[in-house]
Length: 271
Picture 1 (cartoon, rainbow, N blue to C red):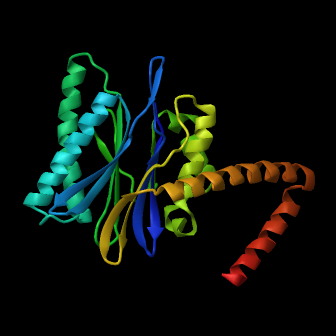
Picture 2 (picture 1 turned 45 degrees about the horizontal axis):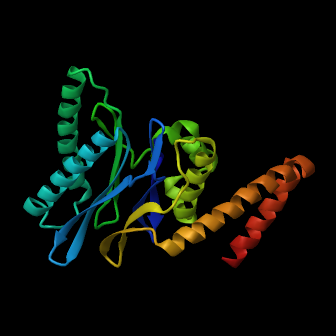
Picture 3 (picture 1 turned 180 degrees about the vertical axis):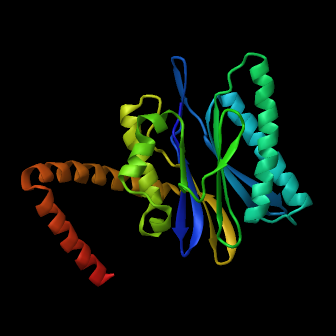
């Protein structure tokens, strides 16, 4: 099974999206590593035009079909209608409707044959104006826009075993995400959930960021150096949370809160 997290991030004053996942797949008694985050690009000569990021959870065959459908529709539209460019917010919305129509038809056919459609997929993009799109597809093929509310999506068994809970507990707010390092946040959630859910593997760097930089839409994976840095930060933060909890029991909530507020004021003065 799996855990896939998509977050909207305010990056240098514009919206961007981060999609991360574990890489463990469990089929019966067999466990293996597999790619779950899929960047979709259009190759134009020696360049790659970013179109979207997809992430799926559920039946591996259906997820692959979903990726193929998304890739085909987005690439065809990019060539025929988008002048080989990253889609605008409105263009991406229309593309999602086409993808939704095909998936609904496909899954209806499977259900008529008595087959279950274990399928969830996230499809996200960012346009040249720095406006993020994020859609969540369910087992019926229906797409729900989640870029405005809640501004994130969590799918897979890890959703049930704590992914969504941790996001809310840590107070993730897309409008204030510029204050957060979402690489650390994603790594933390996946690693913590993997400790209690054997179907979820720890984070090993399956993460893609789509953003606008210097007027150009960029799409790329997390670098190996960043993965090592995030893993070390997560280790430290786990220890800090444990010590913080013990301190609350010893000193009490009010005293600890006063110290935190004092530290926050000091940080604000120096920033």
